[in-house]
Image (cartoon, rainbow, N blue to C red; front, side, top):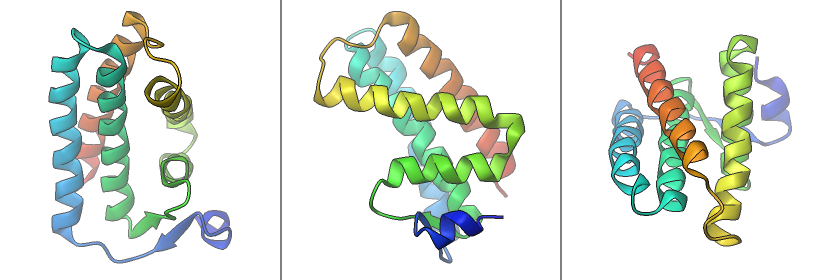
Length: 139
């Protein structure tokens, strides 16, 4: 299923402990709470933390399947894995999160004040739903 990602070195097969899976999911839940608090003060950082909640939940799922992203372009590789893992049914959502990966990078490193209230709220809502979805798929 993940042959192309493995062959290209974007992911690697690895046994990940239950504790590490749990910690990644707990980080995603903590990040949702933090993002909610930050949204009123600093949308860029609230957006970045909501994005991180999605990334950590994705990592938890990836770990549960016995894979890790390559360290180079780890965020991008994580979303490539999630596209494969969750299939076409969730393609629009994972593609959205990947676009938000790029936007987060711009907001944090290039253009302060880039994130609108609508964008921040949309990501937080989708991140909250996604973390709950991933939680439901983990043992």
